[in-house]
Length: 73
Image 1 (cartoon, rainbow, N blue to C red):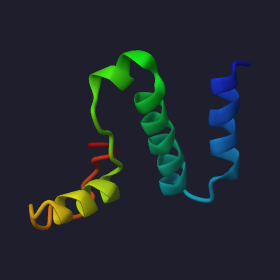
Image 2: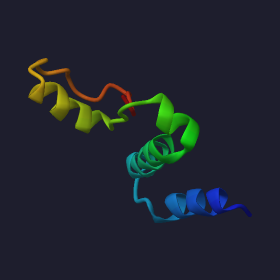
Image 3: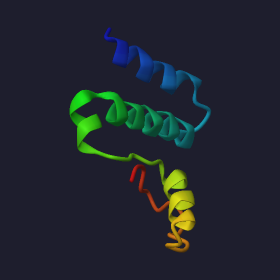
């Protein structure tokens, strides 16, 4: 079993809800996109939806609304 499979299995067994599994996975993908050399150089920022909401408010963009299934921005 690969390290990724082990990590995903940990997510599946420790999460108490589907939403929590999704949150674990979203955070994993964010870490991947911000650290893997190809993507790290491709994207200047990667935000979770709630992080983006705060960022948009700080930039004066107004309320961008609730999470509507968007995981990363």
